[in-house]
Image 1: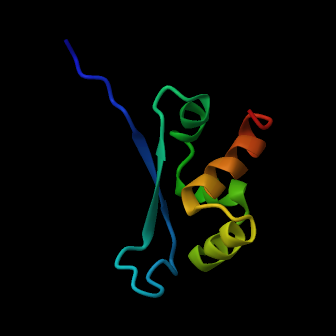
Image 2: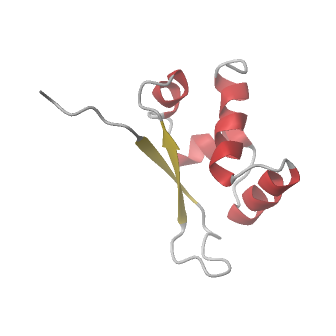
Length: 88
């Protein structure tokens, strides 16, 4: 029997991703692979996803997520849900 994936990941690349103590320029968002949002996002690519969430900067992403009291991954998925699925 084949083991089912529990998580699927999409990475977003940020030119300014090396701020603070970060050692990587990308930020990875975890999804349930069966989730409609993941299905819609997996083919978009980093640039299109950043366009949809309205930021091209890691620092802006951090600022926006803090303003809404959300984790970075939660903020990204929240914005994508509203843009792609009509707030599922």
